[in-house]
Structure formats: structure tokens, C-alpha cells
Length: 231
Image (cartoon, rainbow, N blue to C red; front, side, top):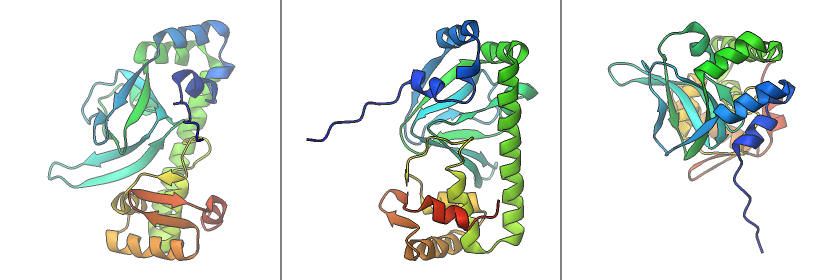
């Protein structure tokens, strides 16, 4: 008899994070008191470009995408946000309206930490500042790698890199091997046309690194994909 796995909780998200366990007891208590969560339906927006930032976000369950859409309807996906991801700190630190949309690729639950609590942690907790510095540095390094990949890497490696990025151990520590993403989304993440991306995905599937199925892509050999991607 199969036992249904319990849904992850906001408390588990906090305890498994790199920043919450190292806060002092008073700071932990304030976070627990101020944190709340929202459900975002598939295709729904957690936030939109132009919104005044009111929260820092943590993905409890599901998968979201970070995307920018032009006025004429064209869009580019900047990254995926899986369970365990914390995001939105850049906009809070800059104090400007959000510059991208966060859209759920499947039903998702997201923790919301109010901006006042975020700013209090930033001002009073040195360990939290260390986390933010590491997080921003890791994200910048990844985006610089994306720029390099677009100009220097072959198609298969670009697609492998896009997939590996969804399993970044610091930025996205809770990814499910079965990714509910379309081939078009992977093409956006790779900076490739859909046709070239699809051909690369088929070659990665033939190498038994991934499996392409209805509703998404399953990573069969993450270590194998990582070996294809320059550090």
C-alpha cells in the first residue's frame, strides 16, 4: 500500500534553508510570527513587473518561472524557481518596482516574508547578510555563465546547462527530478530556438541523461549532465 507523502511545510522550508538555522532565537521567532504563505495556481502570477515589492519569497512546493515580457508580447524566461528557492531580494535591496513576472508552472505554495522583516534582518543579523551576499554572488555567477554559454558553447551543452541550473545546490536546493517544464521553456532558458533546443533534448535523451514525456522532462542522470557543463 502506497503511503501519500506529506506536503512540505513552511517550517521545513525554513529549517532546510541556509539562513534561518543560524539566526539567533529572537530573530527566528520574529520570522516565524511574520511569515505567511500563499497558493499560486498553475499559470497564475505570484507578482508582476511594476509591482511595489512587499515581500521576500521562498518556494515551499511547486515550480515557478522568472520571466520578462515585452510590450509586444514576446517573453524570455530568466530562470526556474523550485522548492527551497529564496528569491526577490535584489528588488527589495534596490527599493524599486519589480522588473519581472513570477509565474507558476504548476500549482505552487510560496512563503512570504514582509519587507519590514527582511529589512530588519538585513540591518541586525550579520549571518543573514552573509547569506544574501552568497546568494547574489551565486546568481550573478550563473547569469554570467549564461552569457558565456550563449556565445561559446554548443547547443547540447547550452541545453544541459539550462537543466543543471534548475538543480543549483544553493539557489534551487529542492528540485524534483521530474521537471514540469515545456520544451519551449527550456529553449528560453537556453537562449535557443525551440527547434534547436528540441533536437538537443532528443540527443540528451538518447544519451540516457533525461527522459522526455508528457507534461515535462525527467532528469535521469544529473551527474552526467553536470559533467557536460563547464564550471
